[in-house]
Figure (cartoon, one colour):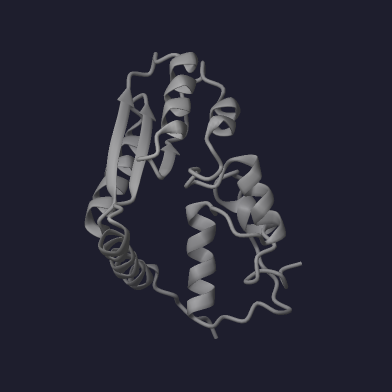
Length: 186
């Protein structure tokens, strides 16, 4: 018998948890989490995604600053911006929206982000942490799947899993993860 899991219900619960955590950080440490979002170009899906992130951050009490540039923004300038954000103690997280324009080397840009600020979990250090089950940032879709399984007490031991696609942001982190939720997915 199939079980339908509600991502909407879980997302709302997680938003409430994040709101409490952000409030606690502010009250106990006078700290408001701060996310820098970088958007190069005007890809409609990317613009929509970033708008959604800005709204979600506002709802839970995270400050966000969007750095929006035209599609002809140079790779050199983008790398300098990332360096500046890496060294800014007020910035706690960096999200570079993909895809980037063709003239910008995505790998070079993602590798330039400080792993401790790489909220997308795409830096090789965070990917390595994911592979061995060590703490670190996990890409959003795999994290959502982890949470759906864990919070619904879905036992994955001995189960077969079909993952369609092979993207670096979604399917690959799911099948390659060695976290406690997936250690039986061989």
